[in-house]
Image 1 (cartoon, helix red, strand yellow):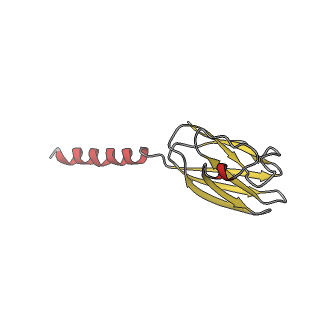
Image 2 (cartoon, one colour):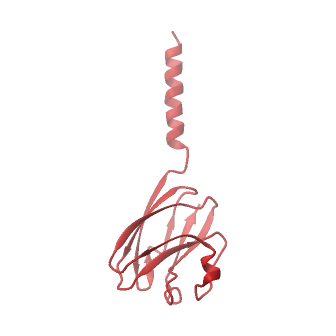
Image 3 (spheres, one colour):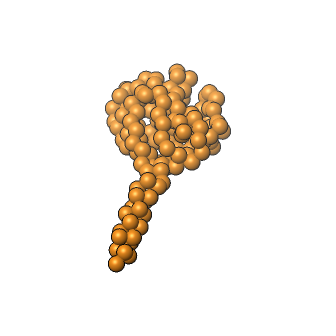
Length: 131
């Protein structure tokens, strides 16, 4: 009759492992204005599903562009930079959206920019850290 407690422990243990395993979901929020991201840095777990809520509180369209690892955009943002984009979305002035993507699996600090002409030059840059 000892089988029932052992089976119960195995089932419970498997549930705990499933709950703890995997990167899970990260929810972050960022406001965009002329010409800044707030906050200017965020952190999420490697490989996690990220639900990024973007609010464009400015009067111009803005975009949120995450670059690949070990890459820094040089101004102006151009086709060579576009080839190094990991994830991106655009938000019209006064709008908000929730954008979902899978975070990079490699630890590091990733550059985030607004690629709309003149915005990066005006300082619209942030970072996403994968610890």
